Image (cartoon, rainbow, N blue to C red; front, top):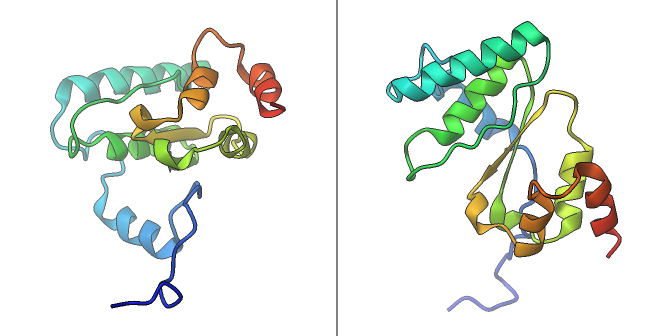
Length: 148
């Protein structure tokens, strides 16, 4: 039996990026363009239109919600969108965002056009879910909420 003192208990993960080794490994396996992505033809066609329209307007792509069962390519598509838009992607998960400050820290470090991918968004803390709700007025309300 392992004594509690001997166990290494990791801190909770709020990092927005995977370690370098993981990123390098994933880059080699993950498709980099919609043309390389196999399956989901209707979704690929829609995303292609969204991406081209955003590029022509010289603006970031509009909000995109990818949903479905595990293994359908949501994370891969998010990375493809970022790659095709020439944007950085920041990845986190719903359960990792425990406090308003966690979300504020990530949002404050996003650049124009950067993409925030929240995996398992359905598991967001209710308070954070309310902040992300469309009825609220973006950054101003996030700053107000962060003071609570």
